[in-house]
Image (tube, rainbow, N blue to C red; front, side, top):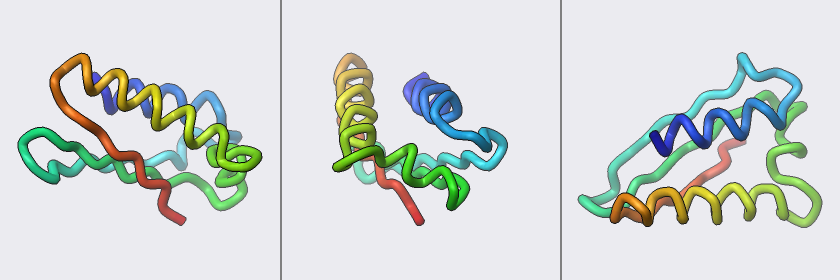
Length: 78
C-alpha cells in the first residue's frame, strides 16, 4: 500500500510515468527503503527547488509508514 502511494505521487509529477521504477528493500523488521528511479529529464521535477518536492514525498511516506508501525526511507537514484 505504501509503495503504491509513492508510485502514484511520483507518476503524477513526471512527464514519463512509464519510466518510474520503485524497488522496496527491508533494512530490518521496522524499516523499509524505497529506491526511486525516474527518467533523467524528470529528476528535477521529483527533487524540486531546493529539494522541497523530495522532502515532501519523504514526509508523506514516513507518515504512511508510521501508521503501519514502520519507518521508511526514500532514496532517489540517478
